[in-house]
Length: 592
Image (cartoon, rainbow, N blue to C red; front, top):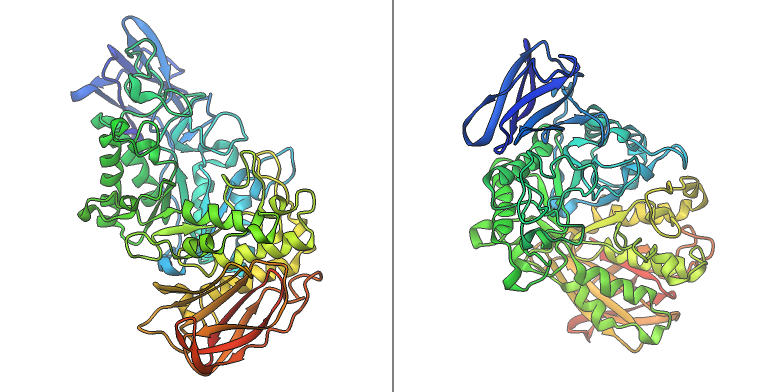
């Protein structure tokens, strides 16, 4: 489909079942509709081979419907001059060098979500690009990040957008650098040991600059979207009446081809599918009367094909309904996603962090958030306190929510790092949002670049995240349990506002495996706080969020580890006591 260049020219193919004739016009034929007509094939497809048409040439399809001429961009165009411009013949050949990237195991992933336009923009007047993202790969690698997740980067109207209004789903945003720059970014990410996951939008297309709309001139029911869309009540979404027709074979093929293209041609290591609740249900809820079985089966088909051909590549769903079937295997009747964003973590944890009064923090809700499990697998969920949705839309960064106007104050820093420590120690695939590690302020929007000078202003904060990520990935060899399947919340004190839990990987755990996390959600210091311990011996502090090296405002409270004493406590046969600072997190493991 689309424009396929070869040695002698370019083959063009398009689906336009209601067109009476189709021609390709472009720079290679002086935009003449008479020179290169397409031949009608079966099932509404049209194709022609054009000698001399080559990569870099601009083109459109010229269709006639009921005598009316319509010029349309190629739905499969890999490159556009801009969303309201013309399609460009793209050469898919690219020198990947010695790219033999090995996708990290999913229990070792630490995801960093970023927005290309603002992540590393040169200034407020210019958007960032794929290559400017690549400039920060040494920084991200040194932070410990081994996976980036890009907000949608396909062609959208204008130069600034979150990307959730795709105009040309197969073309990479021209203002970001287009397809070659994207491939170069992926290549460099892999050279730095970083996987690339791309956010894709299949719950709606457009609404702006959308040549797919009434593509070949046909529609029904008073202004429906035509061949690519539902033309009845099923078309309605929160973003317009522009839901793709998941039941039409050619549209299903279009979306499947798109998903596989990113993984095959562009070597992305995974996909994050946006708002899939609106693919499986008209209203995005669990009301069966509004279900879209074709949407469900479409995503299942795509996931099944990826699992069969590229099982190491990850697919992540944003469903946010707590539905276990989303991450259940296709063989067991599920939709087959590998993991899903988890609302049962982010909402209660953010509430516990941002609630003004300590007395109102709910430790039972925190404990439940820590132990949520999908399909008996700790890594079927992605957990976070900040994402593009959670730091915008009337909400702000966690630190700003804690103390509006004083996001870099003591309490904001203490509690936002408390949240970060839980993200990086709880069961799940942890995710950070751009700038979170250097206390980016305010709310996210697509017109304000990240302030990279804040890295120098908060070097200790960056070190805190680096240390947490190192422990999460077990880089020092003492905290294997943080990547394990097993979690036990064994201490919940709602009066004092403390929670403790254990993570382990193998069998019953043990030295360098079982890891204990103790979190204090109150402005209260403890000289000797007692908790149960999963085993005997010396339990060494591997991380203390109150260390003054992380921030000059922190207290550097002595939390020096503990010797396990015999005696039942919290359901364990051993216990110990340790000092604990206000709003602090300790991470401990047994010495071998």
